[in-house]
Length: 214
Image (cartoon, helix red, strand yellow):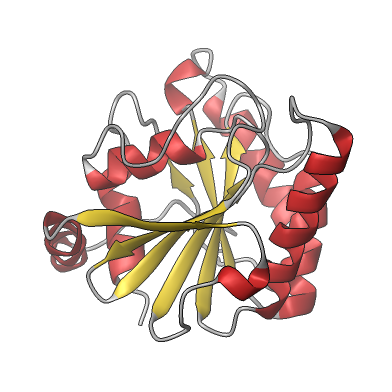
């Protein structure tokens, strides 16, 4: 029996496609605070979603080799806009973190509504990468976003972050938990990616996954 949700294992050709895509450079386009501010839906886009402080901005910086491209912070909820970046013929999209955030309640509610509206209604969104902190696994608040993606028929792929901070021997247990939580979700893409932005682990694999999305 094949293992459900195996780790992604791109071919050398796929890795090279990912390298070439990101070698072309990425640039910040705009930050959006309302749906009417979205850029034209004229190209494929992928987005990064995750709990506050899961490491979305840091991962985007690692992918693009641009340390300051996406603004990272240790303060949960720092990203309060939908941030668009151009990458060749596509967009990379950094979404506001969901869950706990160090911001006023009304502000949090406003950007949570924006996040959900975007995920449910952006026709050119080809895949959401749902970032999961490897130290904690899938939380109930992650399940809410996964269920929304199911309803919206948006494929999503789980990406574990901060894998270098796992205790020795803990990864297998975390992967088992993640796989069990993904199993009921029809929109879940059937491969996992494990990353460490600090160590560079899994970055080439994620680049290859993004390049392969037509």
